[in-house]
Amino acid sequence: MITFENISKQYGSTILFESVTVSFHENHRTGLIGVNGSGKSTLLRCLNLLEIPSSGEVVYHGQNILEQNMSNAVYRAKMGMVFQQFNLFNNLNVLDNCVIGQVKVLKKNTASAKKTAMD
Image 1 (cartoon, rainbow, N blue to C red):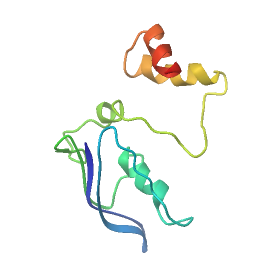
Image 2 (image 1 turned 60 degrees about the vertical axis):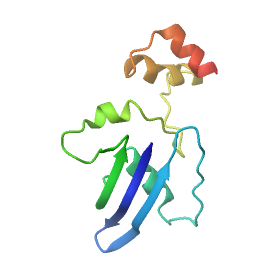
Image 3 (image 1 turned 135 degrees about the vertical axis):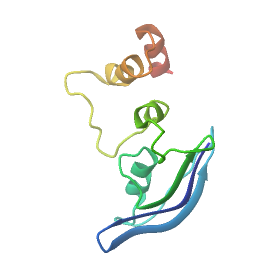
Image 4 (image 1 turned 120 degrees about the vertical axis):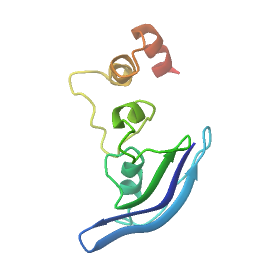
């Protein structure tokens, strides 16, 4: 479903990871293991384009999402992500935090979004 092809990320002269090629398949779980500071979170942030890779391709259903004709917002609407720090909306409870993205971004009705969140 999503493939990193020769992804690299660096900040200045610091290389976080280089030439990573990996595929993430639908309905499969993949674990990333490594020491603190090895680039695991940055790799995941590249998956959702919260960080832009320095080189390589991110291929989603056969299309390189780094190409300019691909809308980041449309791509991100198909992606779910859980952060190390929760970054929830403080004025909402947990259920409402799980519902709001489905209603605002995916345009689901509230009842359907709540059912998905509870599942």
